[in-house]
Length: 172
Image (cartoon, rainbow, N blue to C red; front, side, top):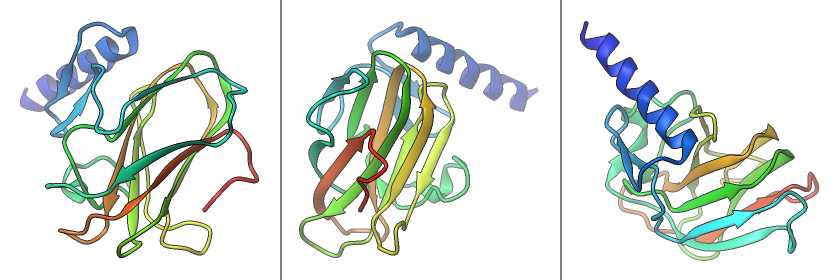
């Protein structure tokens, strides 16, 4: 019965988030903050065809939560904060959204966790032959995307840029 209750709460939280109801909902199943309008590096409203492309958000990776222990799915690892680093509010369906990180200082090993508008999780550690992560969302539906930039190594804080693009030519 306990597992059913957890599934019910997670489903209810996902439904509330998708509807935009409430200022903040905490996903107790994961320990990460979902919902609301607060992110470490801002809330960014985008419409398909946005300019400039890519949208660049300065970030610092790392945090106190070990994503590998949260059961979010394959490739979900790294150290993140409870609050998302960015919230992307997509106004309409986009053929492709690509999230990727490029470091500007520090040990350049970062990770990326994206909570999709439909409530699913997508994660990546290394991509394009580098230590920089990329998450692609094809046929991205409208809604909120919660994004965490993690550090692969506990205690690392890498300054970098979180990029959001619709162009396949943009990548780390």
